[in-house]
Image (cartoon, rainbow, N blue to C red; front, top):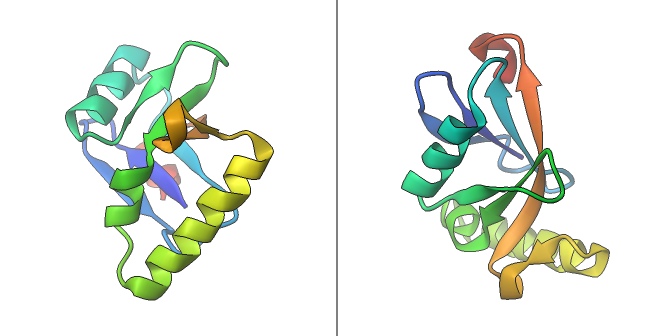
Length: 109
């Protein structure tokens, strides 16, 4: 799954049934301050200063966007796996995700 932040600041969760990967995708040239502001305004997370190129995404926000109980259970299993890898931070409330940049909004989907 990935969080898409469009150049105009819209935020959405795509491929939410892919529980094997998690990233934040933004258009090339989007200022990091805008990415951070968009994540925070949606209560979706924040950028991390360390490690660079990563965001912390809200477990609560991501879980709420799952379509049904089966999706929530699969998401919870993903969080458990991430915890074993050390990718769950801030007392279990956030998941680390890579920040990826794409040439334009069309390539983000």
